[in-house]
Amino acid sequence: MTTGAWNEINILVGGIVMKDLSQDSKKSIDRRSFVKKSLTAAGAVTMGAAVLSHGSAAFAEEHPEEGSGSLDRGDAAILRFLAAAEILETDLWQQYNELGGIQDSEVPGGSGNSIYTAAIAVLDADMAQYIHDNTEDEMSHEVFINAYLASKGADTVNLDQFRTLPSSQATGAQQIGRLTNLMQLSVDTTWWTRYRSFSKNPDFGDTLPQAVPSLAVGQHPAIPRNDDDLTPHKHIQAIANTAGFHFGTIEQGGTSLYPQLAQRVTNAEVLRIVLSIGPTEAMHFQTWADKAGNAPPLTDPKDPSLIFPNLNAPPFGGQLFQTNLIMPEPTIFLSRSLPKCSIVRPTATRGAAMGAVKFLAASGLFIGQSPAFFEMMRDLAEDADSAQRGAH
Image 1 (cartoon, one colour):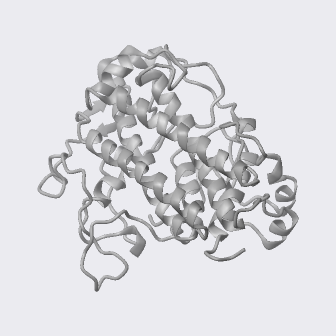
Image 2 (cartoon, rainbow, N blue to C red):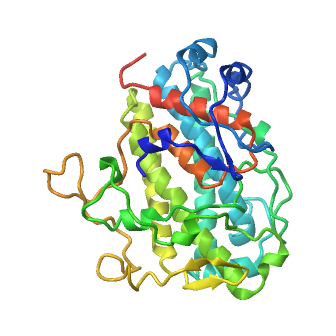
């Protein structure tokens, strides 16, 4: 589905359709209570459904833009949205690292889970190191962007108020509040086919099939929820496979988001920041695209509806779908009349920030969050999407 299309759909969270918030409820939430001059990261809240819908001009007037200091207003809004996105990424990657990554002072947290780590290692022997390094990267991104905003006298992003979602109860996980939920995911795996297509691009409204159809429906854990999930072997392997595909799903989003928002940046230094961080997301994505292809085919014995197919067999397989392909196939770009080009896809900028938030919400990553959280993320996204190059 295209980024813009996400702006037209309702999002399902915890089985509840999120409907438009009334103007009264909008007026009751002051975004400035969530965006503060502080370098503290991450957060979450309980409660179920909320809405990510278009805001109104009246609401924007009542809740003006956060302080931009010496930065262009749109540039500050873009950096704030990216800081929020990186805070969310840090939160989810920390959960993965606590159970399946390397435990050290660079990425403090849990104590590791040997059974989950071994299942993750089936995808690649170096997975623990890669998870650790991805986590460290996201931590550095959120801290740097917030520090840069502060250095320019601009408001920074603090999501600590929302750090209340539960942790995994499995051995190795910290028992602290979380921003994100990795235990009820619906993982979109269309990136697998999108980057292998030479004739389709979501920027043109094209849709592509899921690599793992059953993973995109229902709610599936990507980390063990408790020690009961550590057996039988095929069940914990199904959880590890889910994580392997979710890694790619998350990082393909960042790979597109940075070039999408870069097209709205005005200041050369801010553009340098966006263009310097964005390619690291692409590095992450290419790594996970490679590892997901190693997920062993299986049916989850505790959830027989979850089936990981052999991706080297029909309907996939063949030259375009062999699992060791990790570089984007050339595809249509800008115009169908132009030659095909190997590119990041999508990169159309309209509605990019809101599309990213809705995509994450649709995946179940925010199940359990409060209406206030969704309202805050919606407002940050709207501000970023409203930025225009050269507008002050």
